[in-house]
Length: 184
Image (cartoon, rainbow, N blue to C red; front, side, top):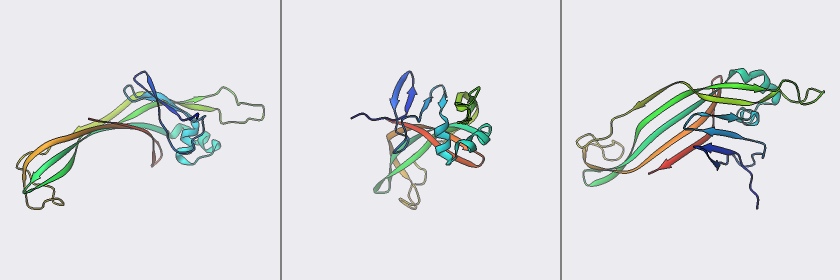
């Protein structure tokens, strides 16, 4: 059985990533999260916002892309006689990406079919912001919803998940196009 789906280029290796059920074979996003570069096809942007080709042509210069990333640590905390889980959002950030609208020099046909837009080239981070937070420690209060009134008696790191996402915005509307994660 032959299965078609968009491709995601990561560190020189191409992985197949299903964006949504029923995505046409022509739909493509190639993105390398380590360099924050790639190409987003016009169909993905139209689909993300429910736009027609004409609407995309009108609004293309106002489309913006971003790269979000995070690291979440899951701890097992000893709170009184109970062991309770806690997800600690250790690191997080967002980069605004530099993009260029890629346009055709002329329409596809003499009738003017098509928007002239062949995609959005992502050329890396333009600027961004990131942060970290302090991990839980012995003696701090336990989560109030898990063990009210107790303090952390012991803790152990259970797992760490790192992740990223490629998003697109038009005005105040934001949509996620791709996401990846790794657990350790």
